[in-house]
Length: 531
Image (cartoon, rainbow, N blue to C red; front, side):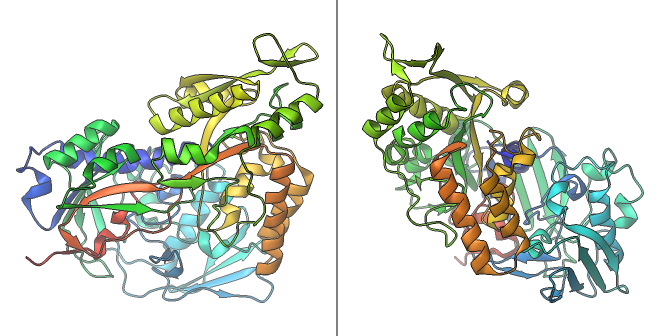
């Protein structure tokens, strides 16, 4: 799991919470899911810790309660939201000017102005605000109003993907600015400009929404939207089949059970969501570059995709999927057990009587943690351990909560996850930058590679696509020579949805999914099917 993995768990939780609200009140054929054509109930696995964008909620867009200055279309291209157009950028890349959409109101009727934008960004950057993602806005030197209908961001350095950061939801200064940012009631009772208004949040159960009749984009046709928190995959599938849910995210094995269902459609969303194994620098085994390179080719990625994901994914060789234009051709690693053994032999790791290698009295053995109850992570951990053992490396799988795992991450391996399609900087910088080693869930492996550090800085500070591509090529080639992680698979996200509406589709999705992603990423644009 990367820095983003723990936050991913929180975002997924949020989505799940939304779902449980729906499921709690319905029975087969008579509940919320089947009650009205203008209501939708979806089931997911987790819920957020907060609903305040000042604390990180919805930072990647699609929050439903809020809008950002910009948003993404179906192809993940930026388009205006609260801004009336894409930003005007100065020649030196240090100034971004956004002209704001006029006539927009918050759901309480108060007008949206430049003051709210300035408040939101300054509040997040305030050292007193408990937002774990504030480092993502590090490039901002200041943000200021330019009249009531424009804002100007001034950057410390040219940050190529800055516009992507402005999908961040805008909070109302007249409400959130009069409360404690970290503990005020706004964190659980938010007010925004988005297409939906929160009506209920029963933590651990559901989040309920109603359409915002004054939404600047037009009142949604789906009037009631509920997300039910159902952590157990099997229970989620059962409730979908019984009619309690209109839609649900499901693992591949359970989604297959709906393939022949004429009343439902399965949507497979491509994603940047990867599963990987951290190789901590501070462990005598995983810190050895030879062990890292050997494990990187000892794993059978294709078998994991076929057997663990039922084909719903692809082999991963780094944070960038092979189908992305940012992927570096030639960095694919073939499964080669014989070569892995040779690397270990030449590095002095010799097999013992039990087949497990040792060097200078150190046994080639280390623990690998995965989060309790996560079947996909568990399966990946066990498959990785099996492949490693064939090369003579013992991997001891352990499960626990993040509270148990986090203190051990300096020396213990972790079955991690992450991924963001918005820009390669978003995932790779947090995952690989040496200065972020030990910073919470950032750079969990404490990877330290000066060539990678320089390339990451070059890529984020250049506005030239060719320069950026060359820099990320360097990063991916360095990961071949000295892996800090063994990347295993990129996972397709599978959703099964009742055929009640038109307008459904999926985007390329990040690791964090559930509320903001899935076929309901644009639920405000759904229309009931004509009978």
